[in-house]
Image (cartoon, rainbow, N blue to C red):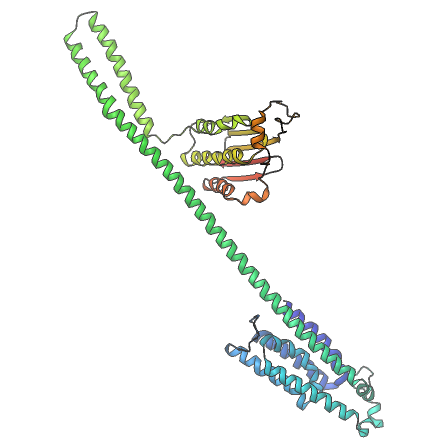
Length: 429
């Protein structure tokens, strides 16, 4: 679009020079010729570049080269066609047509000399030319030749402007193209990085799950092979004793012992089946991870969920909570920490928020709890500051939080207006 605007500006400014040097049919022909040259070169020259080597590529650029050279050479034969030089100079600059530029300089000088010589011939300035309207706007031929130097200087300035506009527009187009390329490359790399992070998270969760599953299977085998077999043998022995001792009260007492052994055997079977189950206690896991926070913060822990949460959702919520708690322990100098995990009819919500500044001697005295921490803990935290800002939200840790939420179809909102707050919503399956 910038090339079209430049060409329109140069064309409009060139019409002013045409009004002085041409009249009648020649004026119309020059306008049509200028429009044809502008349109052809706009179609033929579609490649912008920053180098200045004259290397036409393809048939279109060669055709444009020939058209430019021919247009630049036209003032040799028709001096008034010098008004086309600014129009052609725009495309000559773009195509690096140094041959056409050289021809244009020579033809410009030739046209100047020719019109100057015509202006000095007395026969041209006869009475029949004095009354002649050169362009239909009331300018006589004598006036036209009187201001010939001004017209040529105007054409020269317009040519320089055309070259400057061509270079500027070309650089702008190339810069925009490079910017789009960099933006596309950046988006592609960011997408690849997010995909790799998701794969790493999935691989890490898979390793943890496989390790837990392997350990559960080992414990289940130990219970089944040792305790289960011993209880089975004890039940068989008790059955034999019951067959032998049928008299009372020994028979009743042995029956009670067998019932106890049966209950123990059932409990062992249930425990073995539970070890193979994929259930994970999310509340207990978060409580264990949050235990170190009580040494430095006022912890408010609120967990209200059922046991029917899907395994991927459990791993995602535990991983997000672990990442948030780790960041709070490492970086936060605030006083309060809220951890809330609640179950709603259609979603789970996890909120981790640390807020409230500390003083040198303890917590903020305006805090409603009024609890104080020791000076030793304050000295350990002094100078660390709440270093998490909006810029840190692009860090690897927070990116992992977002990826974990997205892996189970959830959303994550991270803000740092009042302390640091992570709000995660995960739909229920």
